[in-house]
Amino acid sequence: MSTIVVLDNIRSCYNVGAIFRTADAVGVEKIYLLGSTPAPIDRFGREDTKIAKTSLGATRTVSWEPVGQADEWSTDAGVTLLRDLQAKGYAVQAVEQTPTSVPLASVPVPPLVVYVFGAEVEGVQEALLQTADVIMELPMAGQKESLNVSVTAGIVLYKGVLEKG
Image (tube, rainbow, N blue to C red; front, side, top):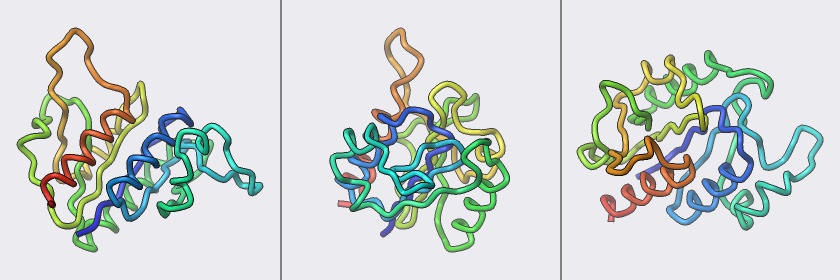
């Protein structure tokens, strides 16, 4: 069993750090940081203090890798990454609200899974959604349309832990 996370152009360092902390808690194998998603260590070798603060050291316990260019959306690099992971047997499950999304509770957790979480405002890029094996969403009962991406990641990742045992 293996879980991989792809963060698609998430802007907030605090969200990235919180996702790292949750990823450590549930045993995520690796996090890919696509495009403009900030990395725990910048290209000059400096630690991002905002990510470090919210991750509580999880950036040192969860493997991570930047994908694409930090100053662009890196769509092609993201599609290539997802296709490469699919070729290795991973099921790609994007988390996004679309007309064809299915509820999270109805999607089984496969032994090899990649979860794709999108930017806070823009969501998961369309090309990545088209590459995914399934698009799932968290149904909302209140007035708000969505949850914070780090909260969503926590729910989705812990569902995997509960189902895998």
